[in-house]
Amino acid sequence: MPVVREFTLPDLGEGLTGAEVVRWMVEVGEVIAVDQPVVEVETAKAVVEVPCPYGGVVTARYGEPGEEVAVGAPLVTVAVSPAVGSEPVDGEGLPAGVERPLVGYGVAEPDRGGRRRRVGAATAAPPVAVAVAAAVPAAVAVPVAAPAAAPAAVKASAVVPVISPLVRRTAREHGIDLALLTGTGRDGLILRADVDRAVAALDRPAPVGAAAAATAAVTVSASAAAEVVPLRGLRRAVAEKLTRSHREIPAATCWVDADATELMALRRQLNAASGPKVSVLALLARICTVALARFPELNSSVTEDGSGIIRHQAVHLGFAAQGERGLVVPVVRAAQALNTEQLGAELGRLTESARSGSLTPAELTGGTFTLNNYGVFGVDGSTPILNHPEAAMLGVGRIVAKPWVHQGELAVREVTQLSFTFDHRVCDGGTAGGFLRFVADCVEQPGMLLRQL
Image 1: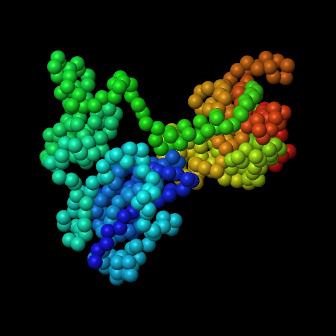
Image 2: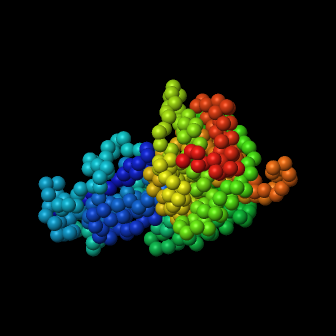
Image 3: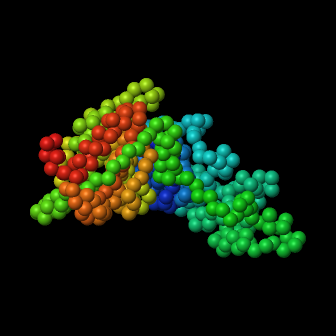
């Protein structure tokens, strides 16, 4: 006897409460295997594929691309039948080996009363599944769309006949209420042309006497000229984290100019030899780990209640990297245990993952100190906001030729500006200034590092 199983969005880690649907990887009516990825979602940390722990026929999908699904809310329903996989049925009515969810997903049915829903879910109609006639066994109950002739009083809560995510997105971007449009497609389906006509109507003045008709056709936001871009996924997580950092951490910044000529010469010498190339970022990371060994109070964070300071033994070095999802901060684990060549290899690997958007949540969390090389954007200085809950961040500006007094004479040298932002609760200005001065000295005289290695 086939059983319909509902697969809900699992907790993807790091306390995330939801995820945004990026694209569906299966269709309603498709037969899927156990642990087959069914949807790609974007969390506050990364874009991940979510596998379904059930094998069978997909009978419903929930959530359009661009919509947010809460943890614990349904993603898909699957008709599990003995015919799928030709496996014997166990005591729960599921094929053996099919019903077992992935590790950490849990097997209990979700509490319908306590399920968290995204904003607006209380008034929105539940997602409607497409009926599957041929693929689903006759005994499986598949949810179907409500009758088209719904009473006028409940029309606002009826399911809008839209299939294309592009149509929904276009309407959302222009403030158009799809429930008020009449579709010209088959069975009243709203097409892109219907939305385009509604958008065009916004750009031309309504004729005298037609105001009521225009109002009935489209709902326009109070300010049609302004575009509201929703904060979702990574952008929302960054906003929340930076706001919290700015609100809770009494941060201060100091800076100094440094002559990086010798550091750049050292890099050229290292890269002239055989072996992997050494980047400037790798050399700066090596300097940071040595400096933090000298000033361990800066590799710390303040407890949640503000009553204590946590001194971290390992340096989990975060660094700013530009990816397809925006600026992210991958983390090099136990950076103090790596040599310069190993640091360079790990920095390169994480940078490539950031560019391709394939960083995992684990690679984006757990940092204890951040290196921010904003010089790659062609700027000299910055006063960045700390990456909460970290207590310190070193910023490095562009390395550029400038006039500089060297050995008592004016010369053209390769100069950079170093800035250091720190949590004033973990140290005073003397410690912060000592750290920054040590880093600047290592940049100007990289041979000093030999004393620390």
